[in-house]
Image 1 (cartoon, rainbow, N blue to C red):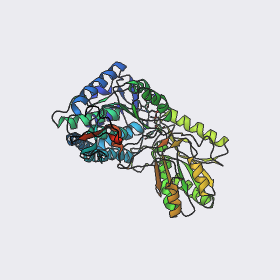
Image 2 (image 1 turned 135 degrees about the vertical axis):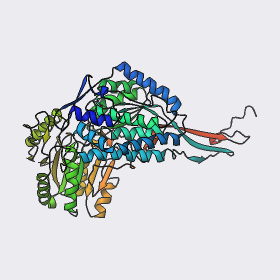
Image 3 (image 1 turned 180 degrees about the horizontal axis):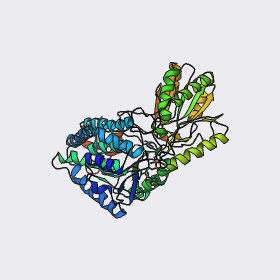
Image 4 (image 1 turned 60 degrees about the horizontal axis):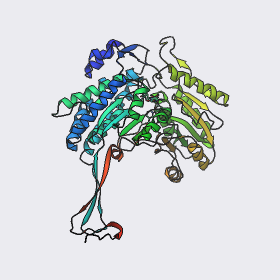
Amino acid sequence: MPSAASVRGLMAELGVSEAALSGGGLAVRSPINGALIAEVRLHAKAECESAIEAADAAFRLWRMVPAPQRGELVRLFGEELRISKAAFGQLIAVETGKILQEGLGEVQEMIDICGFAAGLSRQLYGLTLPSERPGHRMMETWHPLGVVGIITAFNFPAAVWAWNAAIALVCGDTLVWKPSEKAPLCALACQALLERAAMQLEKIPPGISAVVLGGPELAEAFAADPRLPLVSATGSTRMGRALAPKIAQRFGRAILELGGNNGAIVTPSADLALAARAILFAAAGTAGQRCTSLRRLLLHASVYDDFVTRLKTAYAQIAIGNPLADGTLVGPLIGRAAFESMQESLCEARSDGATVTGGERLYEDLWPEAYYVRPAIAELPRQTALAARETFAPILYVMRYRELDTAISEHNAVAQGLASSIFTNDLREAELFMSARGSDCGIVNVNIGPSGAEIGGAFGGEKETGGGREAGSDAWKTYMRRATNTINFSQELPLAQGIRFDALR
Ligand code: NAD
């Protein structure tokens, strides 16, 4: 069971001093047993200012370091993560309550993005273009952008920062990070490991990365600060709605990775055994606390009864408990507010006519300050306003459909557009779901669940999910500024579009 002493040990292994863990104004509790595991210092707005100033000064030096050398820092950071994977995976589990397997998976994802970014550092290429003017050449060049402000949610307390940080660093940007106030320890550990990597190289400017701990007021400071040309913000749509106008007001760039309300369709031709396994992980895994967790399941009427029976059988077998123990599949919710919002949604589901299985609190006597729940299945007669909003907890709304076109319309009839899946063995159905009149999400999967993305693909979603993309593909372009160059190597001065302006000839 987590305790302040065990956390001190983990943090020491990760390079964070004991002094950083006590006497501060932010109490950190483990959702596993509610134990107080640290008291970290909150940063005042003036300290946030200084961190941005230092990152801005560091940027002026870092942008001149050749990109492959910047990639070497990120590669070494990946090496530090490999060395510390066991301790860091455990810290993630202790601080967020996700199972150890998923904590280790999160560190692996960080290692993977470091590999991706180190390779990318030799591929920040621009186009060359044919010019319409004789003796001219056109090309695009990509330059470092500046200081990137990163704001993160509690549920991926390290990987989401790493997705941004690894790519931003190879692009020549520097970083300031405001993590979730529910997961400051992982942020301190990331910073310490990055500093360890930096110490192995010469001439890494001080201040290329900083962590500032605090609440929404620091996120707002990022949004308003013109020294941050890019703010990458991950969290609820509510947070995005508060910050996006402030960033837009000063014409800053934003990567918004906001709430999801992810759906899956199971068609008559689906492999039901495979679909049940995938849906179990997607809906109940991480205690329903992934942005990509499955929340809405549309089942064809012909497979409805069979599939719901399979799901209920699978749900009954989920091992719920201490996420550090072998064999546990579902750990606790992050805290009381998450539990209460789950119970409110289940109440509303019942009044919407749902049959609810599960959802009750577990282990209250053993750990009164921890919030374990049995993942819930709510069979709804139709998609109600409740199902159209994100409740960040393990509730799966199950609904029946008859025509695939109607199911796709229902699937898309929510404000969020992050991740989606279809389970089918019919090529036409799969292609339709991935086509222009199919799913309107940023992630569209076939025969796997909507959660558990891998590094390499662009990650993000449409509509109220915010439209940002990170972690793969050409997402790096958002972290750089593009210059279009036209070079005249002739002795003539023809104008584009054939315009004549011959005054000095
Ligand atoms: P949250 O919005 O409460 O907090 C996220 C971050 O934003 C924190 O650092 C917090 O301090 C800050 N914040 C919160 N409200 C703010 C406000 N009004 N103004 C300025 N800053 C504010 O989210 P959470 O509870 O930590 O995480 C869960 C949410 O995040 C879910 O909605 C989930 O879908 C979303 N999420 C999205 C992604 C994605 O990639 N799309 C990934 C992870 C989580």
